Image (tube, rainbow, N blue to C red; front, side):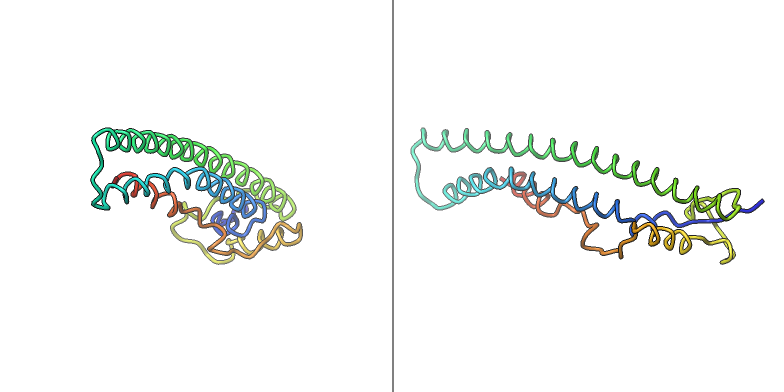
Length: 171
């Protein structure tokens, strides 16, 4: 029985379709940040006005509090929609990537008379001769599906959104 091992993490990071998917996720994230910015700016204005030391009449103060609560509710709705949208999009991207890479690995395995390929995460010890990650990377290159991994492209951290969330929670 011919058995080989592949590192799916390395394949994924260098898989052109996955990297393009990550770029699309970044665009979605940016669209949510764009939707959130006006609310954030308005909330900051209200906070600055409240902390400015200017004395407001009771009616103006209640109106500011009401407006702030509305803005906060809107921001939280956008945040909730953002989390839901991003989770689904990331899950979909991961599934499609896994399926596509599996097909490429299947093709390589048939061509090389390999009976089974398992992921490296499950392996405790491996002789180098059984590692095929570089062979599959070469297959990706031959199909024009390889890209050099760039940390900044795949970083889907939501620092901007988290910063806004902290601002909202502090207010």
